[in-house]
Length: 489
Image (cartoon, rainbow, N blue to C red):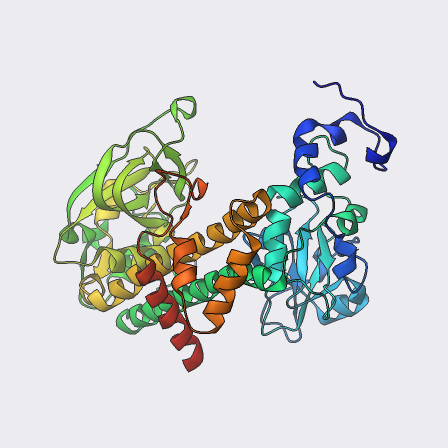
């Protein structure tokens, strides 16, 4: 609770105590003299489809299908169509007013409330949108860097304004009418470009990481030859005596067994490992955020102050997200919903992980239990894996590089967010960013390197903090590789 007197000129259209909380006002005051977002827009913000659309869903390969963006696509500073639904051409025409062009900015009205991202839908020129998406379009002549703006909107200075202008209480939605009234910290365009460039570099690395994964997947497909046989429910047949067991009468188990027998030059997973252990249970109330990743069936889902494994291990879900496989390296906690396997040195752990996670076609057939499906250690270790994949260092090398590249992409995104806050708080000057951007344009990265070296997870120029970029030269090398790969496409 708080009690504070405000002058008439300090009031906004919303007369509700939460909109005037000291925490919100502290952020608002720091950008109180900045221009309104409306000055940079070419049209008023708009919402997506407000009617019933489910009947118009079609598959992605339907002729003239149009992607249908929702709040689920806003996962970072750029929104991609990876998990998007699609609607028919006729529905898109009916709701043409709800189209969002490639490169526009979208903001979540609900869901992850207030999250903003640049829409990336190429090769599509546009998408259609759900009613929980707010679309804002920048004027082409506006003196603002689009990626800088997205970082700013996601910063506390943008989010606190959205919260205040949307009612100020629990932040459960964004008001469409609040968007134009957001104050935007407006530094010199070169300073904006320096920060925006970090976002664009992050996306370049993210794209390169995805391409590396694709190259690894293509190689696995080249080496993986098999025939997925029909289910017993569709094609009854006599079972071979050697595969009979207590669970082998299940149609999918039989299908998995017969299908794996078609894997060329393969061996059991047990032949590739030296140890298989179940993780340890821990109550949620006993889990304390800390420096170590906490692995569950769907992968690293949290952090913890303690660890129960130390080294490089293959982690495979027992239940829940069956088929989910991850590589953990270093100290981590694995819970009792996963199997933790130590892969022998002569085999490539990343290659095996990728095969199991993305390419093994028989997970449904190696699970037991009708109420809670589960992969037992016996069934897991009997899974067959092509030896040429398990030994393939080329596949593993690409996957390891993809992991490193993706990690640097996340760090660049984090650096952009830190730089926005440091600029507004006066921890570094606009002139420093202008000079660094100008030097980059002239082919000199020394000033950029000096700024990057002062970044940490705690902020900018924090004494004693661990640097965000421990190896700036490796970052530059990866950016060079990504740029070359982009040029070759």
